[in-house]
Image (tube, rainbow, N blue to C red; front, side):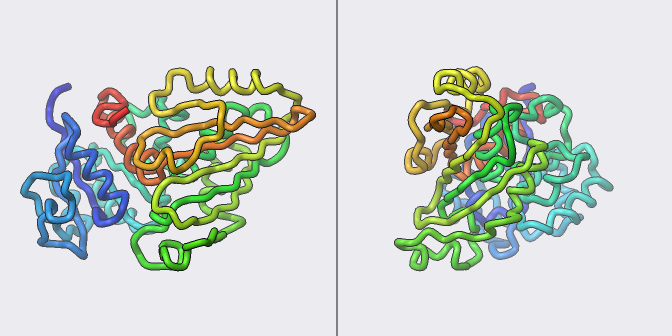
Length: 316
């Protein structure tokens, strides 16, 4: 398959939209068909995105107009709760168009493909409605999954993310001045990603998120109680075997640092530490919340949906 595939992007002004534009602009088979942003309508895309060298201008499409563009895929990079009109318009006017939603709107809808490639690659090639997982949800699932069958009780996850995860709308959680010398806890029970991971692992997860003063990159420390005792070598082997063929996952002995993952497209898992009795395991996972936690994963899903190599256009 060598034809050019045209991608439309709605909600292109945010951090993730910018990363996705950069990836799409460099992709050998994808071409940006249009970018929609209410705030920047009429302005040249190249004026805001140095990675883009074309002549497109931002437009202000409503759902019906976006569905009428003749594109092969539509990516929705909108806040939670805003995707439905675009999906409905495409369902009616262009149902064969691939829709990839970056929000949480369809992560709990079993009629949509939940696009965490390392766990849901089966069926990805036929998916036409794809829900991109959350950034924290990606890290937590990758950290827990190899030991899922061995868990005894809820998995407990402590997370810290850079403030880009709070988006571009001003708030305490993306204010560098307020975050300086701080670690800001929020949504300590019932967080959306807690519910997302509990659903897709079919196992209870307790998640405590925090925001730090760095811009990008997140770390999750997962505390896992086990049914039986393990030793460190057996745990490391289990993760190495589980992720041996995964191009965007690296298993390390030492605990990975979020500063080393910023700007990278893969996730890192390591720091495997066992209690004296071998029945409590602590695992650390890091990824760039804007890339493997969002834009890079979106590109993985689009590649799979169009029958292309999964990492095409993704620097590895």
